[in-house]
Length: 563
Image (cartoon, rainbow, N blue to C red; front, side, top):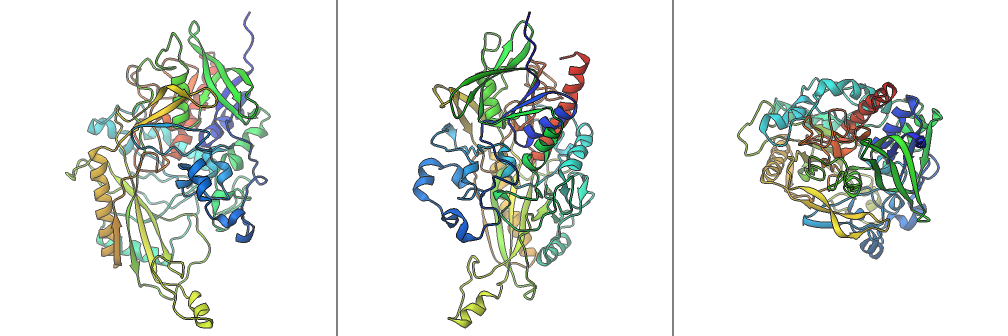
């Protein structure tokens, strides 16, 4: 007689999707084990550097160049990495990966909560412009869902996490369940008026972000202190620590084990079911096995795919749930970093106080009704903002000496407006992750090998991003406009996705419309690996909505005896 599973569900990963899976499954009465490879970080206790004056921050935030070059050559290139946050990140030397063709930056957190502690919190819905794109232009396979399928789950997620934003009525950027929006500053309002007058089809709006503007679900409102990635004691920005994991813990159904590196998913070929996982204690090296009726993979696009590929068996010699051969392929990211900046002399008497954790957003305006003959398909959006240039500014030199010098430091400089584009990446089979045939990490997992390059479509899109950013700034009255074309590395936008895509046809896709593996009915993948296309908007909200929808479906099917 077989032994009963230890848990109803195992969730691998505790980040944005793992935390949400834990919340949804435990609230439906399931006993859930969350396995997280990183160490424990508790909300409100373990944040380092939060609200500290510079003289109390380790090394005053200055880079330790030799250490970074040796141990953090990838992680240290991320905006959120410094001496106040280094303890959140993996050590690259101890956790290597390989690059095949092209370049890929794999940014990885190594703590409970994952990159939910470090993300930029920009929060947008996909629309049917996105869900229908593959079918419309023939790149990739069709999504098995449409906006109407996910809309109630977007509502569900937004009501819980708290998203501040403005109702705009833009068809291809659906409105949501918003808290009061943050405010554009005076220069951004001027820029908005001028751009929208010059380009009636374009909109300049405040960003939609998972940062509270009013108290919500027991969390406090943002007080604009600044360095969010160091930790937020009031929980104003959404993270697993401040929101989903506490909700799961309150049910009494959660078991959370940090320092647990999952190395394999066990599979029963006779039952056609995953039976559990094998894990290694990251501190002691002790190997353990855990069993469950459901498995949710939420480790992040790359780690989830690495685990599936490594879970080979006689039934699945190319990786678990990979009868389609699609696993590992169709890796995507957003183009990132191309844009422009300009200087404005308007509003010399106005000053900005505080540090708003948000900026302006210009939604996609290209190829909305079809191919416009621009030399590329799909589109892009801009994130940016307006800042007063003080003595720390890019080019301003402070005159004077003594009292005159001090007085000059108190006077702000002109306004700077910057725009940075995020462009859509086409799903292409040659962009992929595979496992190294010989090299393994310290836990015994084969190293992932990245093959990633931009196509001419993305390059043409980037050229338009630069040209239109320059044009909008010039039309808005900017002087000294500087633009740049930055061909970012894969992963640089931190929006890696694809590699275990959704689709109706099990011969072409790993997952069905409910993020359920076609080949293994009790296995679900709800992180970025599930994505069938990338859109041009930040994807985290879609990951969470897919997770909540999948958890609801899995719990219902389990109760009915269907899994």
